[in-house]
Length: 404
Image (cartoon, rainbow, N blue to C red; front, side, top):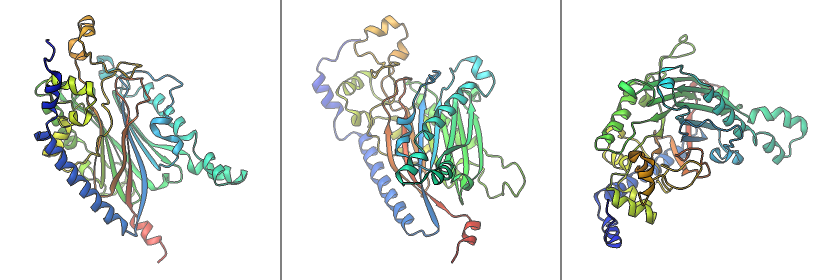
């Protein structure tokens, strides 16, 4: 269509400070930071608690088989060697075609991703720490295994894959790990969309991580489909206890929101609710904060609804979607010339958006970092990571065995 006649005046109109979305966003952030401060105060005087650093990451890998030499160390911040637990959620580890959606639930792709994750986590772990601490050869050999990361649980549903890793020295405190899958795709049940949730007890505190892939699209009504996916996943996900009462006590939570600490991550697919011409100007000017005033997920968080009680850290990074493969250029064609040549108007016109997000709830979680990792061009999405301080209550058994 035609170009904007007066770009500078149009941009000024879009950036007006009194927009409703902007007020909602600012109001939400003020209340969010106040709540985080209360949590930190509450944690500071708890003598019967232990604090861990938990890494959560999400990445839609667009059905691309990872090369054998793909190095995940940057995304996982593996060289820092400062995290106790990793929870990684991937979407589209296989192409979402009929064969994969209706075929076997497990694939070699999951094994390959798990192998790459393990390689990245353990390349700098253990030996480097012992070297820094000046440990002798015998001590190093004894302690090396304690610092290595081991996979606690992993689960796949079509393209959605979750993998949980913990340091070997912490592994004995991670109990009752379980997974639950809910399909929300074709016919509202198939696994091309939906969520894989994993839960575990860490000491006496229950954790649940929900890896989601919501409905896509930027048309009218698509936001409501994503909201419905969220509500459906939260209501339908159930964890079965299994085993005997001794291994799975009745007090274990069955539903997502019954857990003490909950993190929801994934390709939530929320877009920017703006006219294309206006969005183009903001993208060209890299006015990300102004685009975020019209971000569908931030608006939903401000309203409550399906996300009542959830928090998200301040989004200060550039959009995570949609990029040319093996490039840092947005797929969105500014001049429209490539659009006509490609013949796929819908996909070519998908404006940049923050599709990949991490939310949380629970007073014992305090977010330290929330950022996009831009060095990976394997997919049309960019990976996102968050780091939390997670407070865990000691279990009654631990408390009874602790000297007075």
